[in-house]
Image (tube, rainbow over all chains, first blue to last red):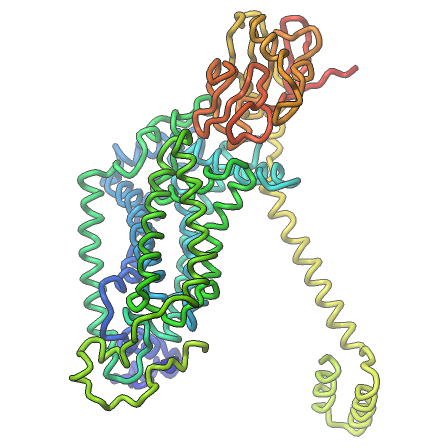
Length: 426
Length: 206
């Protein structure tokens, strides 16, 4: 599948002239029209397209907001209120952008858990997968800096708490923090550089997304069975099948997005962020945005500053090692009865961590956070490596076609051993 | 590798002299890998690129440091202590950082002094945290040493400070007594200009 169909022949004279100089139409044709996609993909495979849409939506709304926003500690809060009250449709642009960040993370978490469930991170898709982890880290940095820009109480104190994480680094920590701040505390220079980077990072995300899609088009998409495309009957062309399905999913997702924007635009934010930043008063309860809560719970679970910071970083970095920590030869959890239970337990633990991150750090919440944190890491370091050896997977279908149509209809024409994966160690 | 490259380069020159040279080079490389002038140029160019690149990165990184205006605004500040009543905590700013000035009561001083110093996470006697003869004045940075939140005064188990963010507890000397904070609330540099006036940002020149 690493060879794309090169059947594209331009029809018009101009098309021929252009194609011989820049084969752009041929690239688009082979990547998004003739590209073979497994015929059994579910709607979980549409979240890549939804994420691409969200990235574009965030960039477009962000570029317009930047026309009215002032990145100055004395004026930022007022300029956001100016957008909300004075700028034509400013409220819509801002609510789309603020809720868009949350929608972006909703989609990326579905995308990530789909990848975990169907073993999409396994060979030969490790590079594709690690690029995805890099995109997620860039998204976190972008979202964090974006939340600082309105310069409300949560902006200011969120920036203070997160930048102070770097002071846990031995010896050079304090110097690094003063270079992050551009001063002796979070202040105007900090706001300025965060705005600059908040504008830059989405374009870096777009660059890594291009690599992510490129890496996807080498082995092709994984699918619910986890077995690769073996014949033309296992696949359908990207256009119209995947194109239409992706567009439909994006439209449904837009309805979900619109519900938040028009009916509860502030639900996912914090009321405290409508109070201008005040360095003399900390909000009673500092909580990050919902999409950071599981990692925040891990940070607070460790009763040591440096240890907490390391654990929080490790919680994401450990994802990069999944292709090698998972010793199972079977990709899809659909054929792994034991792992299926551990997978859902892991999902529950992630949700629990998210809930615990929203609670104050006291009493039994701390102990529960510690248990969940321990399990979170055990999932990667114990469950994934050990299950591959002790689990007896269900029999795999011979082909994607057989999994869809049933064995009888496909017939006995499949040679023995055809379900071995020539590309699995590729 | 550089020898192989230089042989390849020589092959392209084609003259008799070159082919003689080439056979000579080929001969030497089979026995000892003699460094050539080309090797030197490679290394020199690479070294210049590395040094030049690092030199170019330096001003960009340094531009992130606190700028001159910020540094200038960080000059020492004077604080008059007369309006601060006993038992009161006043917040002031120096270099954008919050500083607590606490006028401690006799009980608070006694509570801070009657502590087994060895049992503390960051062992420091109360006397090391105030100026001699001025035990009623405690001057500490007002940001929790965990992640920088502002602890609430006169709260927590020791009625010093309690941080609402992650539950760090400080006593009436600003020393950490519980929670995730690793060290005591630090003491900013300050000196008494008179009995009722301090200068924050300036150490006594004795």
